[in-house]
Image 1 (cartoon, rainbow over the protein chains, first blue to last red):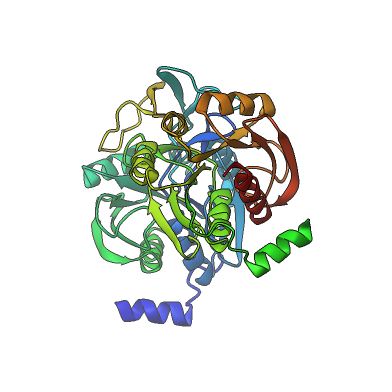
Image 2: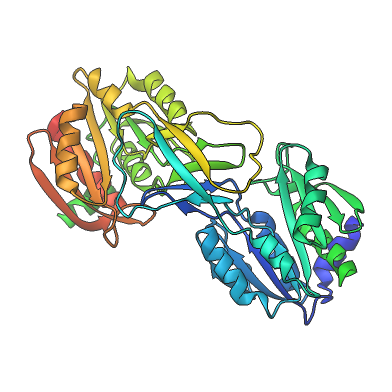
Length: 227
Length: 227
């Protein structure tokens, strides 16, 4: 099957031709003030790899990206966003026309309840930061899914499969890509990943440590079964 | 004077030969859990530019860096750190042997009062994050300064000069490099900066928008006056 994938990449089978795919990628950043912010360790590599693979396979790709240091793949429509609210708006703006939505971005679940426009001067003693919930983009998409294919990600440190299955049901997903970010060679920043693909019928497929391009193609193969 | 700098770079006058300089650079990151963290917009570019310039001018350079996407200059001793506490330890470990310390890192003033080792599951409603003060690295260095030259940075959004002057006194500095990060072409991420050099005698020199390498050399020129 490795040969299959190499052949697939080389020969670029256009099996997603005519399909519109929206992929979210990277972290979001939530400003505390003009200098400080809350973010997470997502590099965007997994999402960008899927965007590139889907584009090579003929899909029309919209990549909604948080701040990353990556160059967007060619032939992909890039929409740059910063906060989760930004990303939510961009996703909703482009949602209608899509056939497939893959939400690989690690969005911040919380944001500071107020952002100040001047740098906060430090003071003696503790500081309490009140965080409010951001919209749950994937949950909102699940509610209006229709016949689109909706794919989520779960980056977990414990109870991987259990949390992933809960997420499929709660967010009305067709497929979830779950990974244990505590494993060597998996998760944020690195070029490889180790994932479980779990569909809404609770079928689980484990993909052993592979580079993110290979995993991207296997995710797309699995999505084809959902179309 | 632009020609002076070009000549200086080209001919590489070794006017810092035999001097030991420690430079801190970049942001720090303060973990909330294994996924989420608090950080700031510092790219490390200003600090790395000073490290490179000082090394070219013959100094023995120790670069204590937070997480950046930059390649360290050659002939520089790089010490990679993550949190402010990490950086504090690294600075203190290398402090004794230095002649000059330039603290260009944008360290987090606060860190979460506890870091959990599993990803926090989101819940309904607000989340309160209690932040505690990090050690003030520059202030601690100021207390044990002896005859070393101590240079600080001030990245401000308002009252630039006033805050910078306060910082010189409070932290026992010889020189401060102050910049208004709200100005176009100044501050975080960009390749240029606009700064005020203010010494402990309250002499102020403004450097108009210049690339960070030029500014690095002008900072070093000013430091020479303090030696």
